[in-house]
Amino acid sequence: MAEVFGACHISHRKDNANPCPKSQTAKFTFNRTTRGCGPIEFRLASKCNMSALSYLHHPPTVPRQYVTINDLIKKNAALVPNTEAFVYRPVHGPRQSITYADLYDRARGVAQFLLASGVQRQDRVGLFGPNTLSRVVAEFGILLSGAVVLQLNIEFKNASDAVDILDKSDCHVLFTDPGINDSLLPIVESLETADENVQQRRKYIFLRESNSSKLVFTVIDDIPKQADVRTVLPEVYPEDDALVFTTSGSTGKPKMAVHGHFSLTSALGARKVNTCQRSILYNDRPFCWIGGTVMMASLLGNTHIFTDSTLGTTGRGIKKIWTILKEESVTYAFILPYCIRDLITEKDSIPDDGYRLERITTSGQIIDNFFTQVVGRFCKKLIIGYGSSEAGGMAFSELNEGDVLETGRVGPPVPGVEVRIVDEDGCPVTTGQQGNIQVRSTFLMKRYHADTTMTDAVFTSDRPPWLKTGDVGLLTSSGDIIVRGRMTENISRGGRKILPNAVDDVLKKVVGINQVATVAVPDTRMYEEACVCYVASDLTPKHVQSYCENHYVDKDSLDGMGYMPKYFLRFDEFPFLHTGKTDKVKLKNEAARRLKLVEQ
Image 1 (cartoon, helix red, strand yellow):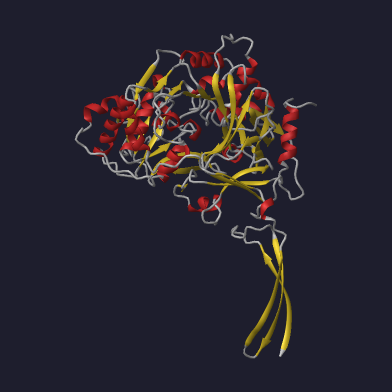
Image 2: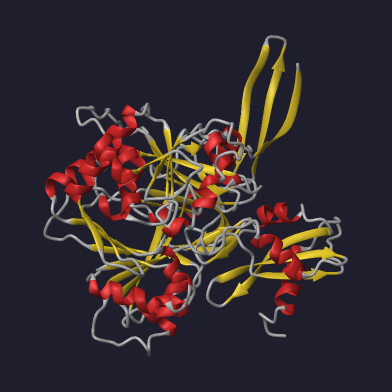
């Protein structure tokens, strides 16, 4: 009989199934006989202290309702039929509104028209255009038909990004806005081939009148004359797909985050409408963003006030926005950080008549204590939100007058959300230690449409899986999340995320550019701006800027910003790492120095 001694090293699994940090060492002894193994002595030495790991969970505070968005649209039309669902305050022109009863009737007509046109349950129907009442009707009409709303935000003047999305999603029907005086028509028309002999690929429903001679289209206001009122709307289920929010991928190719009915109704806290405590909400984001979704107030039977999303992109717009808020008696507002900065900057020129919002909610970038100045002067509370297109809302922090905000602190998880911090190997770290933020909840997207590889990459293999947010941060012992930054090189312009690689890929096509790297540089108002750094012998910055202007949608984009870079710098050569790759940190610092955006 031979006696064998051994030591076993249990390594962390890459699929994150092992909840303990790094590794454990197990020592064992066993006796081997001709008939097999005898008694085994097993001793496990573990450094895993579960109570000290970075994990937070805020249990749901109210029971979830197993309902669809469609159920709530119909319910609100019955419970609060005469309440204004949406109010549009254009920069120029009269106030426009629609009640819950009218919204449901018009949306039902759109749904019946779509069904008669051959749209099937769970087909994807595209939607593009600035915030308007017609866009709201179209979105709810798509949902009532049983189809899925495919949100589009076109960045390129030739609409190549939208064509990619439409083809990938097998989308044959598109609601689109040609813009005031057909300002967006060239972009819309570029969705079809210029060859007049090629049959039109999609059915177009325009959200306003147009003089287009290239496209065959129906105007949404003419649909009531064509819809068959006898058409029965299909049954829709909570697990059905509802909305797809498009967001740029790391390579610049759009990703499509799919959300279901149940995840959205749960995330937005949909519950029985209390007719005595309705709120009036203002939101400055485009409807195509998850943070600007029309579901925000409408599922609760509240009133949603909106204006042109581009109004807030200039500092002068904040006075007009504040006037709208007062005239509409808004109780709570979703305002991007740069607009809050404008409020604070302009506080002495905005008359103080005692009007205060109950709360202002902001998100989209890391903010510091400067923004708390808005509390007491313009609102009673400031809410710092944390979320994404993939995860929805993940956390929020509530600040009262006199409170001090630690930079990046976004508070505890939203009820129903789990958060953990892991290291590069996917192991949970201890409380207070910085790492990668992962979340888990019923509010998460279901998948990236038609992209299994990307879906697998963003979710862990745990059951249920964790979503990798791509953010770096930590959990405090008091139960708050602090966000430190991004794992990626995304540029945070206002609430818009710009992918440097997407800009670089466009500029690599410019003859004469040898190297290009788009980097983030600091901006007092927008937080960060995009700066194109390039190496070329005789191309001037103005030449490169002109090239971008001919390719990117700028002021006509839905958020008034788009992907258009702000700065252009020519270099003789880039700084390099020992690996031969461009040193992006040094390049960013040098760009900021040359632009005089930092202290010299």
